[in-house]
Each structure stands twice: as C-alpha cells, then as structure tokens.
Length: 214
Image 1: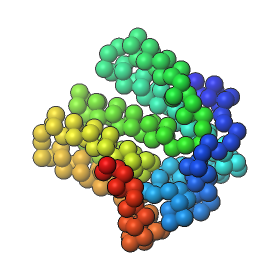
Image 2: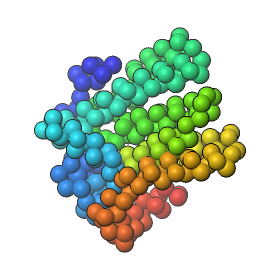
Image 3: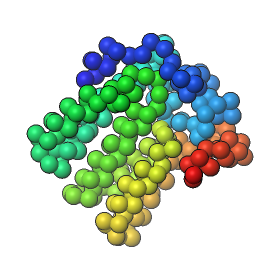
C-alpha cells in the first residue's frame, strides 16, 4: 500500500492550505497564515523532521500523507482484529486501502490523513483501554498529541474521551486521563504560545473558534 501511494504522489501543492503548510516549513507564523490558525504545530514539526532527509516541500508533505495513510491502514487492521477476527481485519484493511477518498488524500500535501492516522490510533488505544488493561495516561497523551496535529478534530477526540469516561465512571481514571491530556497538549501548546504571543494567538483563532462552535 505504501509503495503504491509513493508511485502516485502529487507533483504539486494541492490548494492554498498546502501552500500555507509549505511556507510554514520555513517560517512558522500563524499571524501570516503560515499555516492558518489554529496552527497545526505538530504536523509542521513532522514535516520539518522530514526536511533533513527530503529537500522538496511538496515531496515532504506528500510523503508524510502517504506514510500516515499507510500506517492508518495497519492500525485499522489491528483495531478490527481485536474487535472481531483476522478475516474481518484483513477485509477492512483492504477496503480502506483502495477507498478512493483515503487514497487521494494520501497522495496530496494536506493534513487530513496525518490527522486521521492519530484519530485511528486514538480510537484503537481507547478500545484496548475499555476491553483490556487500562492505560488512561497514554490515552490522554495521544489525545493531546492528536489536537496538535489537527486541532479542528477536537469534536471527534472529545467524543472518544467521553465514551471512555462514561464506560469507566471512575474518578481515578479521569484524573490519570486528564494528566495525560495536559501533558500531550503542553508539548505543542506552550511553544506555540511563546512563538505567537497569547493575545495574538487568541485574536488569530477568533474566526476558527466561531467556525468550530458553529
């Protein structure tokens, strides 16, 4: 699956969001919309890590999509295997690997598929947490990291966490979960505030906040 996605990587920046992501690889500044608010700090950080090995902005961002898209299929296999069995897991992975929207988004310089990778990982860890040995701190930490990749995925993250909290109904569980979330968010939010300034960050995110609430 990864090889097939590498073969068909897009040779250009897909849209204006992709242009902003490309600019942010060189100068991260949400006030200049590099990228646009709320910032996607961990997505850009992953891209910068790849820049040590890949020199083209387009190849960096499309390679990141292809890599995250392929690993999300592996996680889907592990997830459905735990829920059902190997046959169902294999069938699910095959369907996802050839699903047009997944394939196309895995070829372009956009943050959707890296965000999906972390959401899939979060859902898998949440299910393991509910059906086996609890690892609430890790669940919270991955939740915080996921928000640093695509903050606009917050409603999905909150939904997964609420489901876990309702199932467990334990104060101790909620405390460990909250500590994990705080740690995961702090990794990207504190540097983002230092880079942008709190007032500037608040003003820049006013519009996106209205959109998310709506």
